[in-house]
Image 1 (cartoon, rainbow, N blue to C red):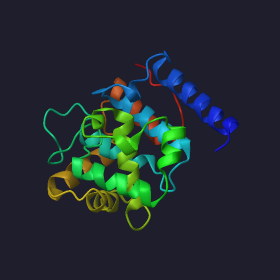
Image 2 (cartoon, rainbow, N blue to C red; image 1 turned 180 degrees about the vertical axis):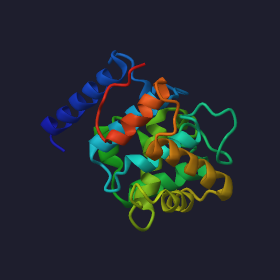
Image 3 (cartoon, rainbow, N blue to C red; image 1 turned 30 degrees about the vertical axis):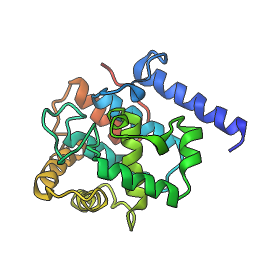
Image 4 (spheres, rainbow, N blue to C red; image 1 turned 45 degrees about the vertical axis):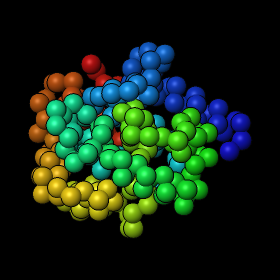
Length: 209
């Protein structure tokens, strides 16, 4: 990527940060243990607009983030899961292998400005590292991500991609997340509901917090 292209991506990231947080000096996508729907959305938006990955589906990643209550769940939803997308250390190693196989190491480093190659389980507490691992797992899994309406198939896709063992529990939580996002069964008027609808819009509406 040339300098002008890289500058364009950095400028876009700045705009996204300012739109979501109102203060671009604080990038919560890079803040350890940051959680909440606005952080999840900003992290997903950053990766999608980087155009690094071929499999770009914000719904599956939004639904996964909802299963962990955007990282606020008191107990891990996935055995050994860390962060908003419940990435395990095994997932991390697999994601690194996929990154190398797909020759994405340089793109991730230059466009997203993170050294994912050297990431450890400690970095999984950082939302952007966490969601990049999730995108890599999806990128390396056979087949396309099922369309938005097929949430059960999306759940099975992620269960296979992330090698989740507690499948029944995860599938139920994923279905609950699908209901919130697709059927508007959230608590209307709350900040979280507004952010969930921002996922649905496929755009950059401000989260009115």
